[in-house]
Length: 137
Image (cartoon, rainbow, N blue to C red; front, top):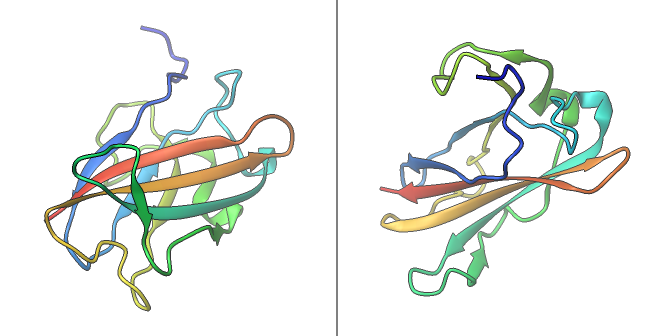
């Protein structure tokens, strides 16, 4: 097995509580497969969408959680980490964000699928998307 991180795009699945928050963790790499560092990114943001149960192309923005800016240095680590709660592999993660739910809930309904889409705009190159598909209970 190669020590290089996987570069294939894939959604990250999880479960959340209705009205609760979520700790989002991921290993984010660039087009070249190199792990991204904060200095590689000019800005970042996230949006949360409620997904339609019958049409995967329909998504409704969750109020208060659309195109919210992220502070790159706070969510993207300059090195890979393997601390709790990372349990995916021994390689580690470099992205960590806890969704803020004090002012408005991210997951207002139970029994629904939500998409959290994080957008990184690199200093050079195309935008990088990291997506979390979450089931609310």
